[in-house]
Image (tube, rainbow, N blue to C red; front, side, top):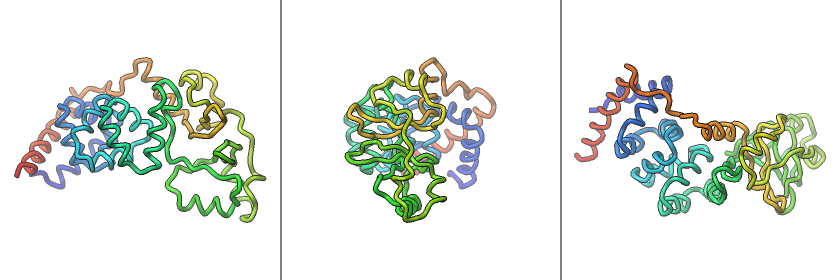
Length: 272
């Protein structure tokens, strides 16, 4: 029987020895990994799925209950869930996109339109943008309630989602709450077209920005990309293997034994 202590040890190992743990999981069969994902907390499932190859992660999710898939996919970074859904079957992808929250589904649908080597495929979801007609007071109130990522530099949109510029978060704290943010807007020095290649964007990245705004050909803002995300993607293209640590060490063997034990208990509970 699986005990609380069993699960706690697995949890601690996954956090402290992530590479070894993921490599150990990667040695399991697809159905076994799916059973683990089904019974793991979503925070741990994210770690496993983020480090499997997208093709394998897609096959795993297709064997997990639909309710659990929705929970995990919604919590994954958008670029990871996009890669997984791109590798999954078309029918499975359509089913998931239909049931995800609208804001998540919108970004994923948009990303999947572009090829993997184009920046449009790697948009960050839930990124806070501002309306040029807002006041400082309104923006501060929105920041307190938003679930979107809030960055030191925030992009400002005008009519028809046209990119107007950006403001610095610090300016919100040093100006009158009644002041319009239009007077605080800085011009954008670099934008990225959604169909540009990842390599071209990285080669010409403005080091002043951690994120760059992504626009369509007509100038409409559609999202942002992070340098960190694109850099990791670029590294994988030159052969970096995220599962370079094999589970052949003593620690890996112990972890695999523990997982196998939990799998057996989970299977018994399912059939009882």
